[in-house]
Image (cartoon, rainbow, N blue to C red; front, side, top):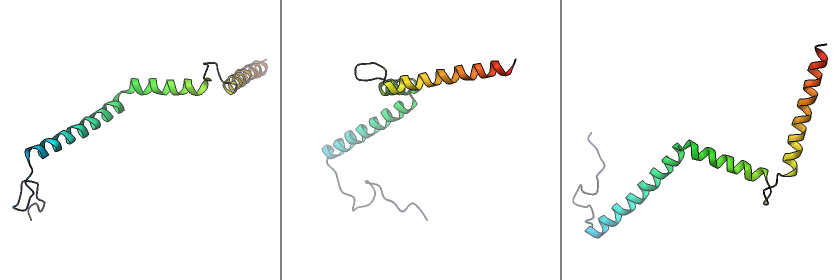
Length: 95
């Protein structure tokens, strides 16, 4: 009931690799590990993620020239108008 798998150094049928092949495999594994570490570091970097999100939202809310998009201005105006109406309505209800 022991381990049934064999590693590259177990058994007589394992392929013998040259030092160059081993070095190439190690270099490839190092590259993969470095990529994985970079991905994990990026996921843990909350400040960078927040900055990217802000940049994305800012880019979506402005034109190529940096001016606010008309739909953003319209939405902001609607929110202000609704706030004013709500305040007037509440004020009127307390009298």
